[in-house]
Amino acid sequence: MDSPEKFTNSKEVIAFLADAFPNCFSIEGDAKPLKIGIFQDLASRLQDDERVSKTLLRSSLRHYTNSWRYLHCIKEGAFRVDLDGNPDAPIEQDHAEHAKQQLDESKAKAAEKRKARSKQAPRSKDKRHSLPGTSAGAADSKKAAGVKSGTKSKTGRPNKTPPAKLTESDLQTGTRVTVKLGKAPMPAVITEIAKDGVHVQLDSGMVVKVTPETLRLASSKRS
Picture 1 (cartoon, one colour):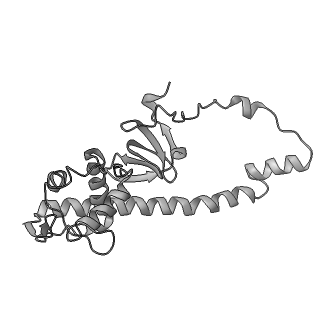
Picture 2 (cartoon, helix red, strand yellow):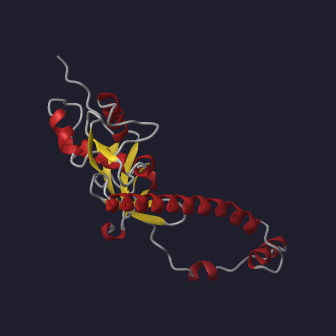
Picture 3 (cartoon, one colour):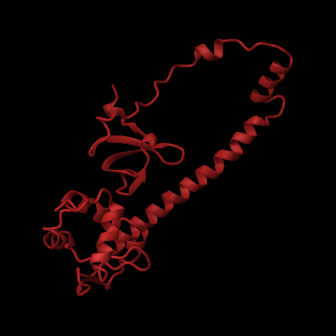
């Protein structure tokens, strides 16, 4: 008899957990605070299930508990639940404050990225429509007059070595990388390689899924 096909990413694992333990996990609506030590309970319940490894299970739990939907449910005094939905210990104040801080920081970073993206388009238009007298306008005037620009500005600029792209050997968990989110690359580390993308954890602790094309080797690993 063929072995069941293994899960390959966090999305599949979370959907499986929501189906297997509906009183504990969910993929929409309000989330429920999880019992501390829920990983050990899951590892025990799923020890005979070959579809999910402990490594993928751990990273999937981290992905689930870093989501805005989950962080929003961590309120002081609310009861955590076990795999069957039974109340466990109440949430302590410091846990609630930490979750709120994570949520606020994550939302602030998301807002900064949206703001940065919205500023990029107007800037490019301004450069194309520079008035005469400005550096861009002067360059356009020279072209219109048939004056060739010198090569001094090109040769005088230092040649910047572009960030190194990831090779197949670099594309593995634990590799330090930079990921382009908004204007500036952000340091991160690869935590999971999935069919539909690469999961990386930023220095802030936030886990995001990106395409391999957006990743570059961190400066410490470049040749």
